[in-house]
Amino acid sequence: MAAATTSPTSYQLEQIFPIEQHYELLDPDELEKEGGDFDFDFFWNWYLEGEQRFAVMLGVRAIGGKDAPEEVRVGAVAVFSIITPTPDVPLQTFLQRDAPAIMAPFLNEVFVSLTARSLTGVLRLLPFQELANLPEVFPFEASSGTQMLLADKKLAKALGVELSAPAKKARKAKKVARAPESPS
Image (tube, rainbow, N blue to C red; front, side, top):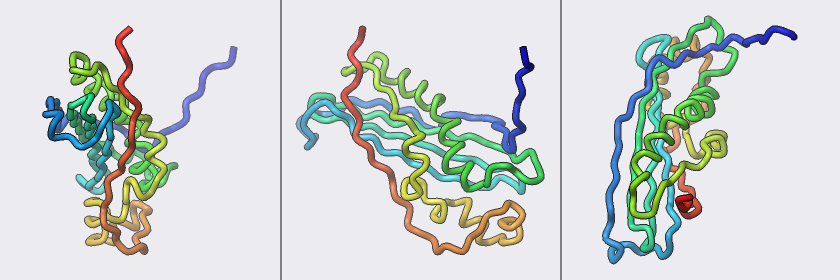
């Protein structure tokens, strides 16, 4: 049997911690949306914590309709460090694709815990992979970290980040989810 091989990684997760955990029952009469489906909004940003260290913020908000009058908000920050001189994955790609995918199971666990005994039952997050590849969802140019790199072009070059594109206004992603799973 051949020995398993591992590929080197360029980034290391140092810590991840929640910054928001919120559950609230809403007044159904104040909601416009009919039905029990939930609308999901995703929020993303990043910032530098040093020359080889950065933090990624990721948040999710779900709001139900009249048949599921609930609001759930979960947010987290993950701190990563660059551990190789020349990362095999560009920083921008890691920030927009890989970091959210790494953080997703943590956010999902908190999300499931908050909704486990909710009015409509357990909710699970949509896969982050389908959102992480959409540049309009996680606008790199409008992020705090990119603004920090604009002020320090030498560091931007050292990190391999090209800042030629003009800054865009940040937008939030909106995704409609299916109704919550019924308890077995």
